[in-house]
Image 1 (cartoon, rainbow over the protein chains, first blue to last red):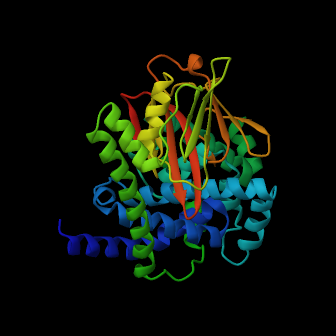
Image 2 (cartoon, each protein chain N blue to C red):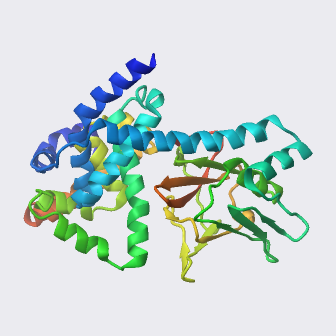
Image 3 (cartoon, each protein chain N blue to C red):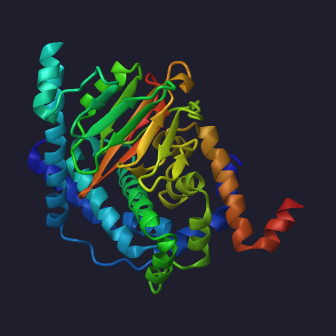
Length: 167
Length: 208
């Protein structure tokens, strides 16, 4: 693959994938400004490693995970500097962006691993095996996390229905 | 729930996807802004590889000289402390080791791996990469604890956690399960460096 083909391939991927990746990162963090920066950072890393990323079975998943990993360190720094500031920022920043819907708010309340599984399996529509490879865990573990996450989301979004299913 | 069960739970999945598609996104940044940022990553990575290449080509005293050239200071063994510009590794009296990494100096992965190996700690160190073990994940209970700069202790959980690079890691090699090695992912985000620790099986792990 030549350099110009590399560049053209990345440009095409970037144009097609920016919005979907940004939405997923924003939905996971609840903060559009932060998500925009994290996603740009992840695409920059993807550009720097494009020969590897272009052969990845799920390049969008690579970008999203990379963005969320970058965000984790940002969040950690902010948490140390100003306790709970991330929640405040998320609440203020999500206004008017559509990030404060019940479904996405419930998604953000899930434990990190369950949220990752939902992001990859449902929002990015990867199959179970690809999701498992992405996370470095077994397909059975993905199913277990998925099941727990769906139960928690059901309970959060519709407690009455969740109780009926449980009974 | 198996995969088919999930498919049958399509209402919830559809709700999530609909909510996602309704999220308003700002305008896509220009491609040039991304590639400029990407070039900075490439430069940093090449700088890291240059250090690795020199270290890989040398042996014995030549290796020490090469690292001196890269890091500015050769590891000093006699004091029980290995000190470089980028990190300080100290062997404690109780058999644990303390690792402090500078937040302002570029870490050379090969130098840190070599220093840990000197103290009998097998480790894999990578830049801008996070590796996690494939199943079964080794338990890291008691292997790593973290001391934050403000003095607060923080014990690492079952999964790798991102922590500031200027925290102090306390490593207990005796608690490492057989056949495992430490992993440190050194992440560079602008001027901020963070270290992502974990425990992996060297024959079965995945990096992203």
